[in-house]
Image 1 (cartoon, rainbow, N blue to C red):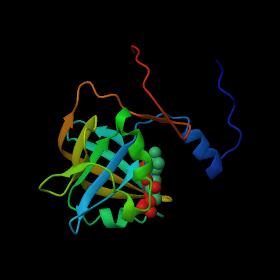
Image 2: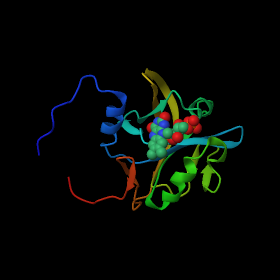
Image 3: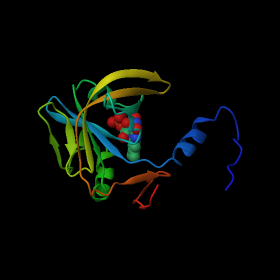
Length: 169
Ligand SMILES: Cc1cc2nc3c(=O)[nH]c(=O)nc-3n(C[C@H](O)[C@H](O)[C@H](O)COP(=O)(O)O)c2cc1C
């Protein structure tokens, strides 16, 4: 299969959105307790950065109203959503005030909030923030983690949810 030649340089935002949607990702919930209440949002910009030291990254749109609130919390939970969380996607996409209604979650002593039965969970704090155009890139230090060995993750591709196809590298 040959790749088509690039259409235009630099790409327009809508072309970029379409192209980025061609990169399959998982879906995470990043969340923390702020004033005793869970605050958080779905994010698919989560990525692995470094094993030693243990670092990951997430980027937040500058238009996000949740990120400035989340930023006040010392630690965040990052939960990787499983296939059985499909109904939670709609719940967690609601306006911030109702986002956690009907969602089962738990919190650590440090205020990191996790979705129950996530396939993988990372407890993180913000190491550095980098201005990145219309987003802010946050470099995250991982303090603790848990992975369920047989959890089936949700896959986000083309703005739709998918299951996982198993194969070998
Ligand atoms: C699957 C999915 C992935 C998303 N990933 C991100 C992301 O990585 N960064 C981001 O800023 N917003 C992301 N969003 C949007 C936020 O979840 C949220 O809807 C948006 O920030 C508006 O809500 P807020 O004003 O409460 O922040 C994503 C939404 C969905 C449904």
